[in-house]
Image (tube, rainbow, N blue to C red; front, side, top):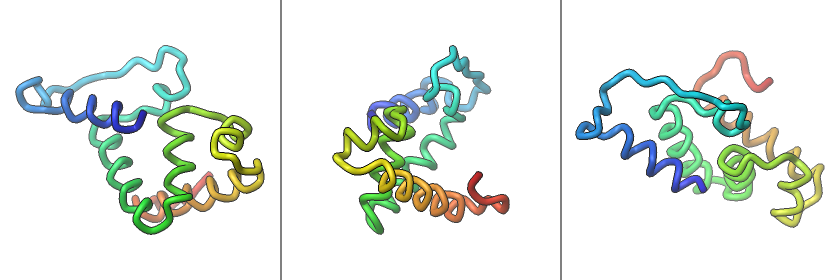
Length: 109
């Protein structure tokens, strides 16, 4: 799912498709789309997840499933074959890593 969204963002952002135009997005009530940001942010998240995958693939996998598939904690635990507490821990750790990676001074919520 991640590769589909990232490829779509790259195509949408290409010069021949007017990549330098200013665009707005509609959330339409979908949780994934509501969290969706600009193309640059989506590509930045994808690059950060690639970097995290090299460091700790289990953490990147949790963020990948959460953001790009939109699963809740229980569904993630079932899909990954893990306990809910393990998923929560990994999600917290991965989120903290992403905040650190992007330099957000406020830290994770």
